[in-house]
Image (cartoon, rainbow, N blue to C red; front, top):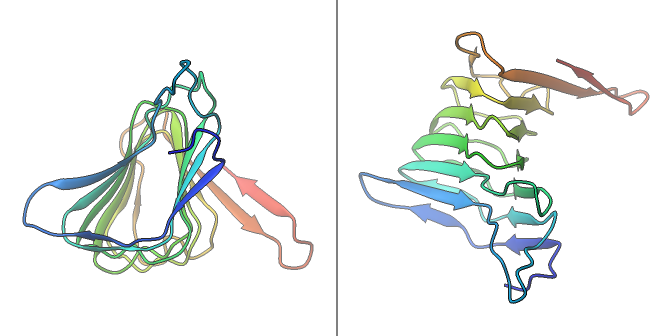
Length: 173
């Protein structure tokens, strides 16, 4: 991997198989040669996700080299299993891909990095926020899902709606 990249696009689909286990996509604080890590980098997945098993999206960078971002921009995420955002690192995980009807639950469980849902999603399982911030950037992001913020704590949900007339984004927390 070239440490000079700003956006690394991975266009192959992720096909999960098997009856047990998980698949993890992880940001990295990998160092190169002289000890420098890439700063403010984005890994963009465009091939979609199918199969069965849970998918973990994990931010592990600590912010000392900038925030890394994991993004799904096209290709549906439609595996049978949970979609879980976790990790102690900073940055964001942005899912602009549609989360399909086979996904059983979406969980935001990272206190330091934000999960952003930006599509009209089809899954009907719960959307659970156990830690950190969930940002909804599409009016139908949770159209078939129930939002569960659990017990009191530091979790937060932010709704962002773009005004069709003015183009201005309005946020409600």
